[in-house]
Length: 172
Image 1 (tube, rainbow, N blue to C red):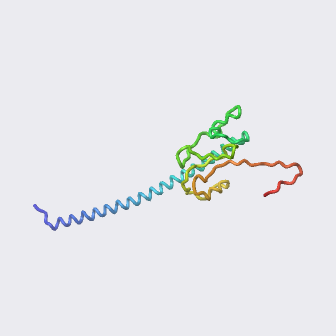
Image 2 (image 1 turned 90 degrees about the horizontal axis):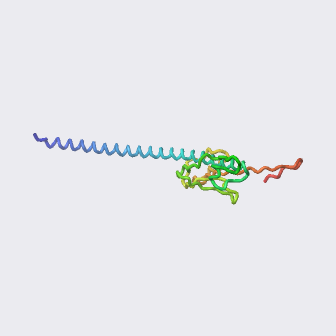
Image 3 (image 1 turned 180 degrees about the horizontal axis):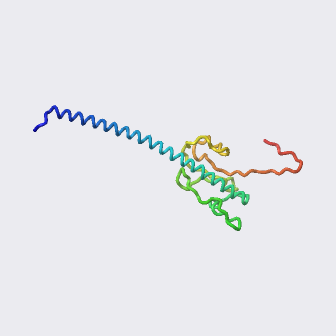
């Protein structure tokens, strides 16, 4: 039994419309998946920013703890892990963290001349998402154009003792 010519044209048109509909569905799914990918990547970067802030503050506290126990800065990062300046070794930092922005222990070490290590920073040149909402001592992070501008530095306070009855020092 032969199929009439009028019926073959009908099947051809229906198949063409189905094919076009399928192509449109694939394009829509591709656009939706790319939007999900952007959101996912942004969320991951925000999480790495939070990790960088936590780790940077931890390094800053470890350097402060090291400084306060002997009034000197560490000469090497490993000194924060095992401080052997006292009879009982101190551990100012539990472990050396990886930089969450690069995934490696490739921190930029900040030194203040011959005094030693005063802080750390990421080496990442990527632009941060977070632009505001930092702690008061991290106001410099607001203007950062790269994660490497987020420098976690310990600055000891200088205390002056006044002689009894002396006037306070003049403020600049």
